[in-house]
Image 1 (cartoon, rainbow, N blue to C red):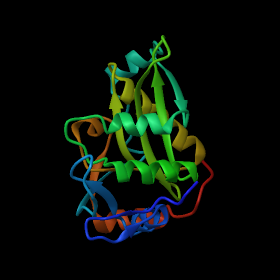
Image 2: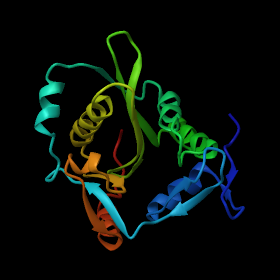
Image 3: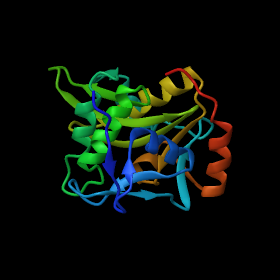
Image 4: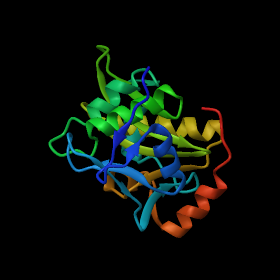
Length: 201
C-alpha cells in the first residue's frame, strides 16, 4: 500500500508518523470541512477520564443490562470513521480519514462498534493509542445509546489491558456524564508523560 501523505493548511506534508509525533506533543489534527485542509490544535484545557472518576449513568446501566447491541472491536474501522464524518459540519476531512485509516492498518488506531439485532452498524467510536493513553477522536450513533454502549465497552477494555487514561480532548455534556473532567495542558502533559510506556492493544 502506498504511503499516505497529505498536506496541512500551511502546506507541510503530513504522514501517519507526523500525526503520532504531534500527539506526543499534545497536538491533534482537525479540519473545518470535509474537503478542507487539516490544521493542528493544542487546547489550553483538555477533557480526560481517569478510572477513579469514571461512572456509568444509572439509566444507561439499566439499558445495557438488556444487552441491546452486539459490541465488537476493530471489526470495521473504515466504516466507523466514515460514519463519524457523516454530519452537516465535520472536522473529519478526507485527509484526516485517510491518515487514521492508515494508522489503524499500522495498529495505532482502533474502533469499537455496536450492531443491532439485524446486523446493522448502529454506533461506534474510534481513537488512537499513545502508550497507555487512548486518545478518543469521535463517535456516532444511529440508534439510542449505541455510542454510549461503545464508550462503556472501551473503558472496560482499556482498564483490562492496563491503560490509565482516556483523552476526550474537548469536554461535552455527553462525556461529562461518564466522569470526564477538564485539566490544564500542563497537567495533561504530566499525565501523558506518565502514560508513555507502550502497552499491547
